[in-house]
Amino acid sequence: MIFWLITAASLASGAVLGAIEACRSGNGEACRMAGEAYLEGDGVQPDRARAVELFLSACELGVAESCLFLARAYHQGDGLRVDLEHAVELYGLACEHGEAEACRIVGDLHTTGGVEGIDVQRAATWYRLGCDLGDPESCTSAAMGLERGDGGLEFESGAEAEAEAWRLLARACRGDHVDGCARLAWRLDVSAPADALPWFEQACELGDVASCRQLGLAKLSGQHTPRDPQAGVVALDTACRGEDLLACQRLSILFRRSEPAVALDAAQRACGLGDGRSCRRVTRLQRILGGPAGPGALQGAAVD
Image 1 (cartoon, rainbow, N blue to C red):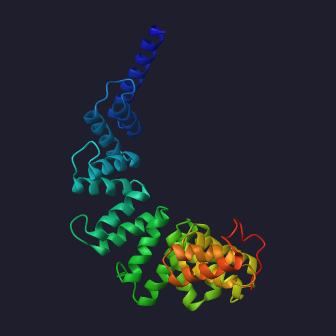
Image 2 (cartoon, rainbow, N blue to C red; image 1 turned 30 degrees about the horizontal axis):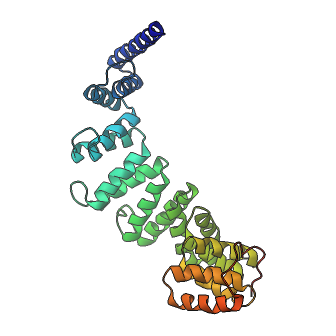
Image 3 (tube, rainbow, N blue to C red; image 1 turned 60 degrees about the vertical axis):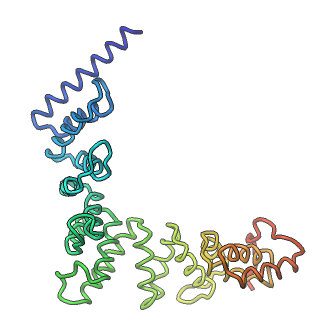
């Protein structure tokens, strides 16, 4: 057993030496692998300083993952002294090598003034790069910049910038970024409510409770969409359980006569969210029911 362990360790050490030789010959992936070996002590004695050297070589040879690893380490002080300027440089290299998240991080730093003060134009450039590399959150951030009037100097008119913001939000939503879906839905709800509903539905599925509430209200009323009371109630219940006060209030009113147990459950949730009128409604509904609501009251509930 001891012999086998020694042999395995020797093989691992030999693999690391081979990776270092390949790294010296310009193989970026080999540099990364050797860096991970020194970082984790896999076949060699752990040596963080040596690992950093190897990761830097990998980054310079185009390995985005290594650039991002080092950038985070310098940014957060993870085993290295905090050096924000160096971190931004490495994030930039990671972005140039195709790491979309790194583009967004640089954009965020320029937006918040985390480096060299606030520079919304530079932030916009980095967000657009991240979006083009497939990061949906970068698309949303780029659109938000255009909404604020930041980063739109390449457009000849506000209308062009507005159209680009819509395109970016749609791209973000198609990448399942909930804020992108919700922002697009609310924008469309002003000018084209029927067109907003599919985006509200997707935002709801992704967890945005305000979008669930809006979808539920539309399904209940039949405005701009076929009326579907059961689907509307389900969407409102989802929003209420996500602590959307307006959804809870609406449900408690909607079922106060036909299904007081359902109304009580919603009113209790609204009361817990600080709504005094709902707290008073809880007292009235409890008198009607003679006790607290039973579980699962929404199943099969009929709309007033």
